[in-house]
Length: 98
Image 1 (cartoon, one colour):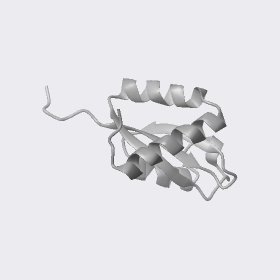
Image 2 (cartoon, helix red, strand yellow):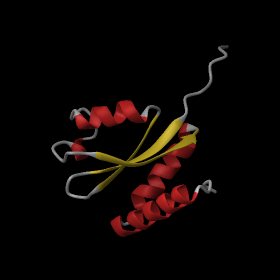
Image 3 (cartoon, one colour):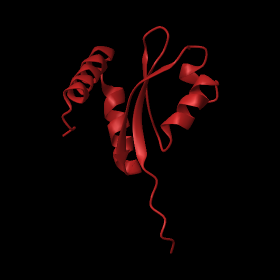
Image 4 (cartoon, one colour):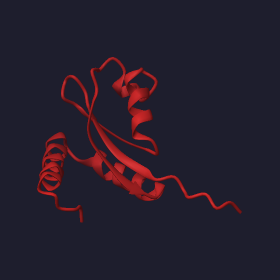
């Protein structure tokens, strides 16, 4: 048995040049964004650049990250925007997330 820590999973949102929001999970947000920008990530983002990371959050366990990603993908575009605005307001106020 190894003593290595399990990878920490992150939820992230990317905005395309047209304003569409893409949701994903990864263990390395910087690497994954670079892959998307290079056209090696999700097909949904290819040719949609420039791509901007608009949100990311460390979730922890893979299972929880998958659940959060699925919930986010069920939201309408307007609901995603409201969710993002709330998160940005919380971060700007210095409060922590629930």
